[in-house]
Amino acid sequence: MSFKAYLFRMQAPEDVEDVHKLISCATVPSSLDLIYMPDRKVTSSNREIRGMSRQTFKPTDLVAALTVDRGDLAKTFYEEVGVTFEDREPFWLRLDQFAATSNARIENRDGDGFRVEGWKVLPWSEETWVRNAKACLSKEAA
Image 1 (cartoon, helix red, strand yellow):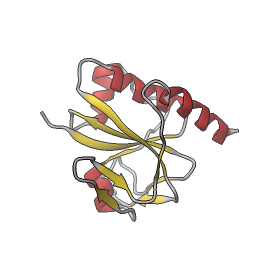
Image 2 (image 1 turned 90 degrees about the vertical axis):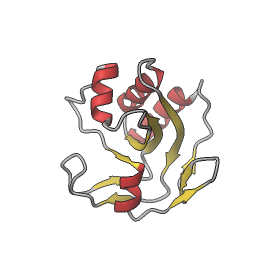
Image 3 (image 1 turned 135 degrees about the vertical axis):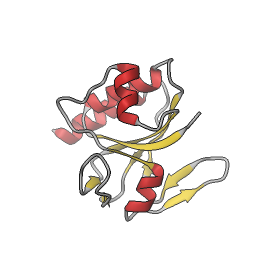
Image 4 (image 1 turned 120 degrees about the vertical axis):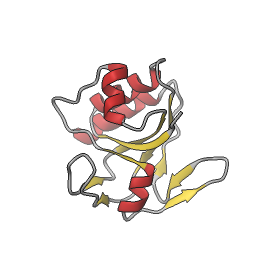
């Protein structure tokens, strides 16, 4: 097994649906650990990531902290739940890439995983996170 931690930027209800499909999939072990709302703009400058020179997490984004038993998240979305991202360009980073290429600080909490310092952890339950995330993103778009 090769569990990897990812930060997946959600900017539209479709992104929420994609994350929900992945963590609901029974064929690959995965979990949604937290949903963050960044407190400020955080930029990654790694030119190797998804062919982009710079990408940003913004205070209007929601960020899903995922743990997935695969090293290639795009391939996992496609093979396990049929998500192709043909009509949009999602953005995510593995936690180790984020820590190495951004201006954010990672706080390691023994036994309780990690936290991105200063980012708000949204207190949504497994039962309400999809509805709440879609509503939050819909308000931001309006």
